[in-house]
Amino acid sequence: MAIRKLLLPLTGTAAGEAALDTAVRIARIWNAHVTALHVRVDSRDVAPLAGEGLSGAMIEEMMSATEKESNERARAVRAMFDRYVAENHVPVGEARLNEMSASFATVVGREEDLVAQQARLADLTVVPHPEAGEDVSSSDALHAVLFDSARPVMIAPLVAPARIGTRICIAWNGTAESAASVQAALPWMQQAEAVRVLTADEYHRRGPGAADLLSYLALHGITADTAVFRPIDREVGAGMLRAAKDFQCDLLSMGAYSHSRLRQLILGGVTRHVLENADLPVMMTR
Image (spheres, one colour):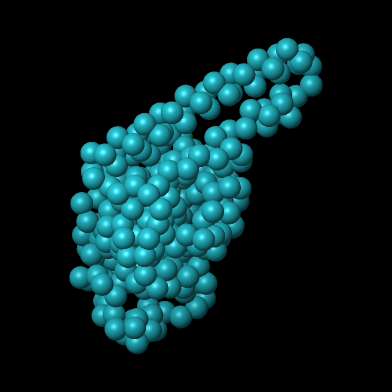
């Protein structure tokens, strides 16, 4: 299945422009439409969080400050979008079949709810890389799409890549999540220059092996090879990223949270390491 619609949730501008650049590059490859979505915080949501012991005037002041900050952020994000599309000659308008274009929308509400809902009718959601100093576990839009959309999500690097999808790595561990990542990557692999399956004893779970995956890909007309990587300093994710770099990979596709998210938040894990450290586009599915 070709990619026709991309969703791009934009919360801020620091990592947002690189994500917009990444999404536009993907849209040019597939003649797809990019829907940039900015979710404004509803100031009324602040009141239940204020807690007891605050006067009505204090709550009103908090709501007013929230509204002001929300307005300023919305203006900054829209200005960034308008400047980017003008400088890069991106057609702006409604989505049309086999035409690359982009549009911008602003809605008010809870970002994690609205983004996950919109992502259900997008072929791919591109999210900005978690910014420096931000706990990756708090990236609500990313996790909402992963857990509540049944669609793949691509984490854009902090610097948009010159190429996307010409040399693809599939992180394979035999799980249902990694199988979903293969399905999401099939259209990419069918037009890639080279494909490599990354596997490791420390990463593999119960399920088909890498050789079985190669046979499956061959039925789809995809020729791939296999690389067995080793953890670096006992980090499986670090070994995976090193193997991807050695292949000059410009798109890594992998399943997310084969272990529970809570376990990974407490103990760390492959998903978390890749989210925090990848400097290339990473497509995740769950």
